[in-house]
Length: 353
Image 1 (cartoon, one colour):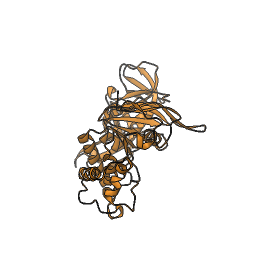
Image 2 (image 1 turned 60 degrees about the vertical axis):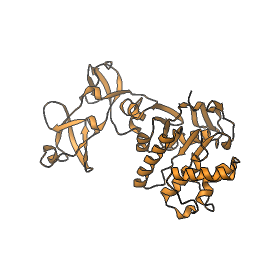
Image 3 (image 1 turned 90 degrees about the vertical axis):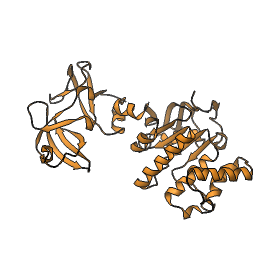
Image 4 (image 1 turned 30 degrees about the horizontal axis):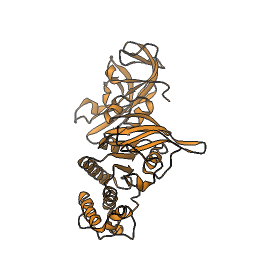
């Protein structure tokens, strides 16, 4: 039994279903990310766990206790909001102590716990400052300290890095992950950022239109997506519709044959999905899949190569070749030959909804 259990959790607004039957167990000390596009229901799900939104159906259990109808302060959760939600007239210490005051914790214990929380987030000595005197990253740490100081059974994070610049985001997400692991915090984390989810979470929950599409580790979702939506959302993927023609052979609409897994059933209509780093290519040769180079995108240590294959766009990603390498001489419009291992491709049902 997980520290946090969601069973058939739903939220409807009139005829509009925002969250539709979400069930999930989060184990003690685990960080699980709710991931999906805007409007998929991930934030509403988090807010139902926190007690800010009442479920239309289903249950929320924390440490085995049904808290579905309990108020936010009665759930043993700590939440960090996207906007930080700091009180501008209160000092840093006052903001961090607020939740303890609401719980009736005595002054001496409050002060000791506030000092410890500020130490954990590396804000020692800044307790008397006001939020406006802090940087964005420091304000985010105050919000973290305020959630941590109550020693929550479940730690809730609602896109906590979205207001930070790219460099600071990368730094703070490492800090949050290290803190979460060091303290063994059971954490539910909402983000729309794939990189954040992939680098921080023990497991990912991909949502679309209020429903869970797949749950798994980053590797499971990247290497073995359940459907085309997950394949497209976790990383980048080449997707080509067609039919399995025989063992190891997949044909697209114009008859071009592509490598696919040998155990695929002949006659199966599907979408062949291939990650860009699995696609190999070379200047035109007689063996392989014919294509035309459309453009290259130089990314420093890596280069994207965009091709047209049977009228469809495909992309390869590889280390930038050194000066003098024959691939450096390829120009848009040049014919090339593509290839990949059949087992590196994944065939997903044509209708995955």
